[in-house]
Amino acid sequence: MRPSYPDDNTERTQGRQGKFIINVRSKTGKMKKTILRMLTERGILVDPDAADTLASLPNSKACAESILDDENRPLVLTRADVENYATCLSKKSAPPQRRDISKAASATIEFPQDIKILKDITGNSTCVGNVIDFAKLFNDRYLTLKKIISRRREMSGLIEIAKAKKVQRDVRFVGIVNDLRTTKNGHTMLDLEDEDDKIQVLIMKGSRKANESFVKDEVLGVVGSFSKDGEIVVAKDIIRPEVPLNSGLTPNGSNSILAFVSDIHVGSAEFLGDEWNRFISWLNKDPVAKDIKYIVMPGDLVDGIGIYPNQEDELLIEDVYAQYAELSRLVNMIPKSIKIVMMPGNHDAVRLAEPQPALPKEIKSMFDPNIMFVGNPCYLEIEGRIVLAYHGRSMDDFVSNVRNLSYSVPDEIMKEMLRRRHVAPIYGEKTALAPEQKDYLVIDRVPDIFVTGHVHACKLAEYRGIKLINASAWQSQTSFQRMHNQIPEPAKVPLISLGSGEMWVEDFSS
Ligand code: D5M
Ligand code: FE
Ligand code: ZN
Image (tube, rainbow, N blue to C red):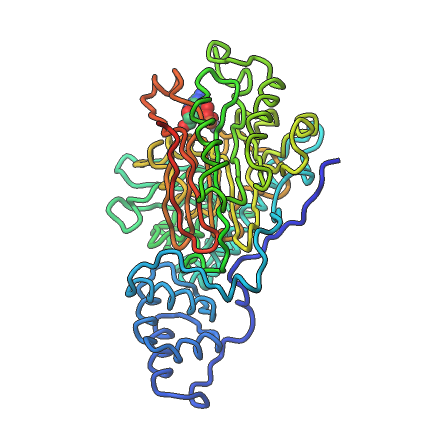
């Protein structure tokens, strides 16, 4: 039996239930009244705690304006939202700060800590026998994302598609994209479906959302009105689940560094052994490396066999067990004080369909027992930071379906995943999906750190306060990549200081 881990479907922003009635007369201050009016006139419901917090800020009016300026602002404003907007505002006006680690904080909290697994398919798979039923998977995806979309201000009053067809006036509903096409006049037509009905949605060429790309099987909110014949809905706005704006990592006093080592591809003739040795000697002697307490390896640990046609011509080790044995030897050179997490990718020895469970016990037994093996994708908690790790196979599908995306900008692809709150929405193309009853690929929790591999690039970025990392590779350009003019950025190690959120890259390529 593989271990089972508790799931955590909670959103980071909680406490949105309850009463939102503000009795302005009984509360203090003219400023509060003015600000509340500003917000409520624009349809924002303000939690009483949020109103107090906002009114007590020295720059409360500027903060209220920044809320109004954010097109993804929440329908119901909570205190946590106000604090996020306030921090973002102060970050905008203050000069950027380098590592600001409070001694007081580090005195009370012990670092490093154990890594917690928050969500992982390993041990929880419900795919059994020959029953292949994707209905439950897509239903779970729809319901989870609908819940997130329904919190958005623009979606208040949303109804089911069947009801919308009866109402026929301005309507708001949520659907999963069943199909999409460009009409002969250049408009976009989406076939959307909810739990019991479907509808066509037209996005007019030249309209506000016409430049966005839509993909099959993503979940969208629609604000629109019916055409004269009552057959289709013309979209006024399209609402993605999106991630809330947040101010990034609050300094927690830790000096620990989390490093990422992806796509090692042991067994490949292009595996970069000299560069690996350089990394290992740096790890064992550099003063900066002493603070590395954790390494996450987001997939393609070995090159595998039979992964692509004629792969054997590019293999140095042709037995998959021998590849893992060599990986074990290479990983054993890493100082024992560093906690290591290993995740599979599309080259590893587990099912290809995502979510992928952790490597099987025959392979685990070849490694140091302290190494943690997790599934792909996986949510981890490291020193209070929420880390979403996903190998990134779906990036192939994003590149072929979304204009302006390419293998050289994985950070832009990661932003598309976050906007859709899903790491692999497109079904039926290169990314195989397993018909689980629950969709483990939904981004139901907002991470602090989001890491991917697969495209062999090395990119650091930030999106709405979330740190984005694409974690390089340890394989030089393969003949396939040469054919497709894909230039990898190998032998680099992205790192993040868990205390301050500072990110940087150590380069071992020369
Ligand atoms: O993928 C490494 C990179 O190479 C990734 O950007 C995809 C690309 N690649 C590799 N093989 C293929 C095929 N068969 N189709 C499309 N793209 C591919 P890796 O998972 O390390 O092989
Ligand atoms: Fe790879
Ligand atoms: Zn890969």
